[in-house]
Image (cartoon, rainbow over all chains, first blue to last red; front, side, top):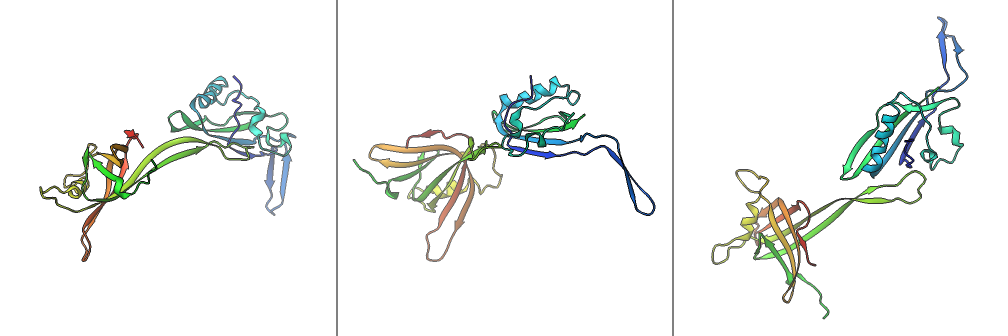
Length: 124
Length: 141
């Protein structure tokens, strides 16, 4: 199955960075070498609050299908619901796809209802 | 027939026994709601969570002619030397009477606090608060 098409209740995106290395000389001046022209390493934390357990287990199913953090995938449009800016700005940048940065966490709230937290990282 | 209920219609039963000299009782029901609002929503949405019921009552510290003292019995649910155990629940029935018809809320509860004092110029009374455990047993209001 694809990543669940639920609308998250919270979303935190960090933009990652370009691969470069900086060298600092003894007089304090810095030299940087750029190793690539694609931004990578962006992270996305998604929270799904008070969803049915039957929806929460879809995240585990998907996590199994991607062999945890091994395989990469794209996200459905629902993940950016409520975002009014450029749709690509908070997605994996060009050349990147998402993979799990850790296992989905499921916190049971009451019988049949759970909170799910997912951490993703963009990789080239 | 139209009917306005007052304190005259109120009764309190503990473990099936109508308490004597009750001056008031109150019951509060709460429903915790869980927010289901998602990104993009303009109004908050909720789903029902867990319910709870609690309340309080006041009984005069009163010995009837037979030595019965309901306030003392209630107080002993908390003021115990041996401590309170799981089985120290009481069956509470909060009742409004209309002729031969009883409007009841029945619940199983722990007496969670008692307040007992003697003051010059005042009748000694026991204020008790209770916390229901589990669902309401019966509702006939």
